[in-house]
Image 1 (cartoon, rainbow, N blue to C red):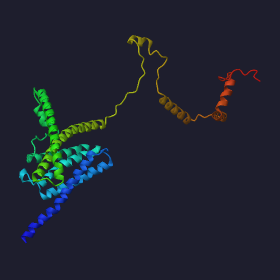
Image 2 (image 1 turned 45 degrees about the horizontal axis):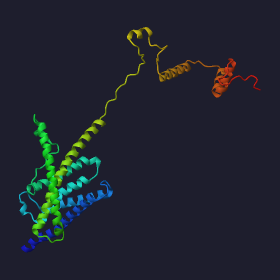
Image 3 (image 1 turned 90 degrees about the vertical axis):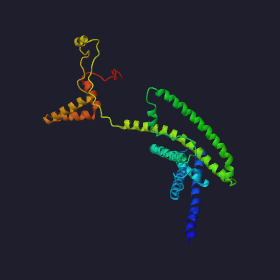
Image 4 (image 1 turned 45 degrees about the vertical axis):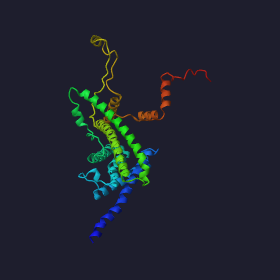
Length: 337
């Protein structure tokens, strides 16, 4: 009876094992397809693959938490060779998160990706898989404090030189790891590798992703600084500025000196005392007042006003002829037949 109870968890682990391994392999395959494709990252087809990979890795993370595969109290030698590959799950989640395309939530996405990469690096640092220094916070407070003082410029130059040298070393290490992985990949994939080769293969994979994670975190920190600057500029541009009251324009005349202005005045027969709109408003008020006082035209005047509105050009010609004048362009019509 005790043997049957003890065998039940083993059967459950055997059932859960292939599911977990399938989720990891499918996500790795999707990431390889996304990175090696010729299509644009923001295309719908690629974004669907990115979302599928994130869903698979999220399920794998929940299963790993339920199985309690890793613990901070154990050493690297205590982890089974077949379980080493599951340490890659946080790094793969960070890589997929960076592939998401959503401009309105880009800052949250890169911050989440950075958290995944840092989680992966902490696990690798805990198990001493590779020698590296954990990155500082993306705000760079510790670096700023170390660069304060009179020798800050020299420290900046030294830090830039060391940073460049570290990038060169990481690049050489990455190429060396890729060559070793290529030599072991065929044997591990075909099942012809022994236990030591399988363990070495997965450890090389972890070391490669340590280098990738450090590079991605550097790029993410730069992008976070740019995104925060953009958000600050947007907030400044969208802030409501109270409207300024512009005083009305007053006409003026330029003179050589104040004496000339006093003697000759403005230099014009008259300056504008009101705008066209003011004149129309004053005229409208005058017409209203005129009508309200009861002044009215006679019947003949009303008839003549109506005829003038109906036949303006004919009335104008008759008025001009009555005054002995002709319209411009009429010319001399004498003896024209």
